[in-house]
Length: 296
Length: 296
Image 1 (cartoon, rainbow over the protein chains, first blue to last red):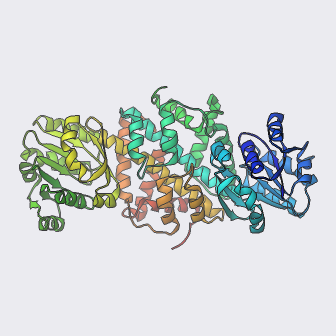
Image 2: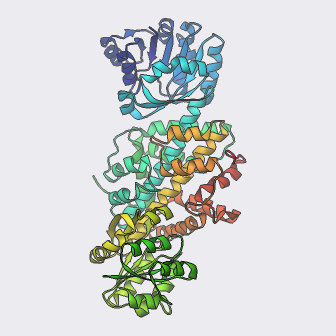
Image 3: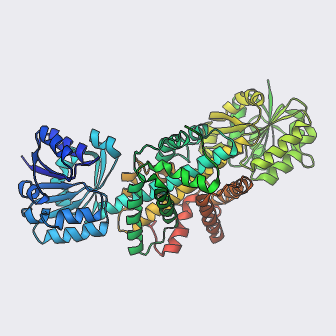
């Protein structure tokens, strides 16, 4: 049986690691904080003291970390994966990070005879728990095929998008659409409210037609109820849109809309909403408009 | 049986009028061009030489016209509805026009003891043909109830949104969300293409999750195929966003996103795409980016 390593047992990583374990794989885990490590150990996972140790014990090593520097450090840093990994193993980064960083890391690991896949996900913690994540994969087709059985324990819609970095590129396309649909949701609801309409009724009426979007139908009602609990946190969208801007700058691609949303979401974080859900974007637009939608 | 009048047998009006006729209502019709009038007459409708004559013969008079000045002229102008309409009748404007104009017209008709409803629709010509339009209605609740059986011949989702103008306000909220989802679709696809991804594959992968929207799933593939045949014409979106800007200016509501899209869609019209579908917006972004998505 393939031994799987998992590094980064955060909000997403922990339920993902649990799914691998309950699918019957032998699992070796490591994380910065110890409670989730203990939780996985109690379920039968083996604890490792460093990414290096995880890599030495596993043939498929998965990382799920906050940002590009974390991934770089865990893979290429001191006591990192690269120090322990055996030729022929596959390292899979499921974090959402810069495609350029993924290409760099892939290059380094290739020198050691190790395959690297970038495989960011969508579907939030609920998808992680139920094993229904969408997984967008960049890297060689061969490594993708070998990793597929393990990825299938975590996701439903698992697609090979191209070479190294292309999983992350796909995730960035996702975040571009998310961002503008979110802004559209805010503006439509703000107009409805200011015009004296019942914003929830408006969402119901327009949500099933050409104006419909996941953002409108799922986050719209929460904006009206002033329910800013996070499904997806503002600080994560800030990070993702920073990556979008790195990518589009690199590609010399002027994208006016998503750049505007990036500025608004940064302003939202500055206003103290970093750990709230992205539906809190409505508050920044309300400040500009001196009009507030709905009430708790 | 209630006699229904219908003025404006264009792309939307003609199939809508046909539905009323085939539901068994006696129908009196008038339109600027004669072929659709003859077509309806052949199906059993009575021809009238002016809006005034339609109004004199019907108790429920429906208008489906291009823009605010057209509606104002047909209702309040020479030989208009107001000259022929009997007290107790209901006039229903199903065009997409300015909420402020609808409030003015309602005020004028009220003086004659005539109720007015603004009842714009969404769902395109396909919805008009199948009688599955969404109809957003502004005006008195009583007039709404009386008009409902006739509206039901044309639509499925028929909702009373508030007083006069509120149907149009709801339609404007719809167009705000449509516009930003459309921009999000363009930018996501442009990024996918420029990054070297297969844009259609990206749409498939991200379209069912948090990035999903009607615009992405329906217009995205057409952008990639360079299929700019109109479902909804650019010139109509230009008009609708002009109304959105009139409304938001009146409400002192700064909506950054939709204003940007309004400028881009106007540029698109200037480039000669007025009678193409709104998915042609991608061409304006491509000009800015000096990169073209897909091919025919």
